[in-house]
Length: 161
Image (cartoon, rainbow, N blue to C red):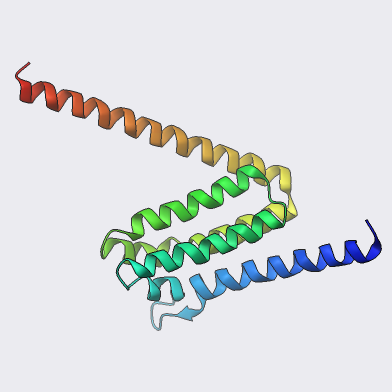
């Protein structure tokens, strides 16, 4: 690769990181709630629009993840970012609860911090992200098994067994 190619790759990386930081700031931290001191962003405001607000937030969060992928972020870290956004999107669909949840669960800020940890120490970020993703898979699998068992018990009770 030529010196010009290396320079443009470095510029692209800096631009991608700057974009990730800007998305996180605007969508999760741009406003300070007086008296309480909480930081909120456009995600909390746009999320108040039923249906459409959550979809817009999901698209913006997706752009942050695309930038992380373009920066070469490892698979486990990207999977954890998707998990953060998925939790935000899933709970965000619940009226009122989702809006309150947005005050504390800031997926874009979490993902920015995760990306910065990965840039500083890729192996450590990959290990911890892999563990979190594995735990989430086990938790979801356990929930599916528990719900399936409850359905079987309920159907058996209704059928009179």
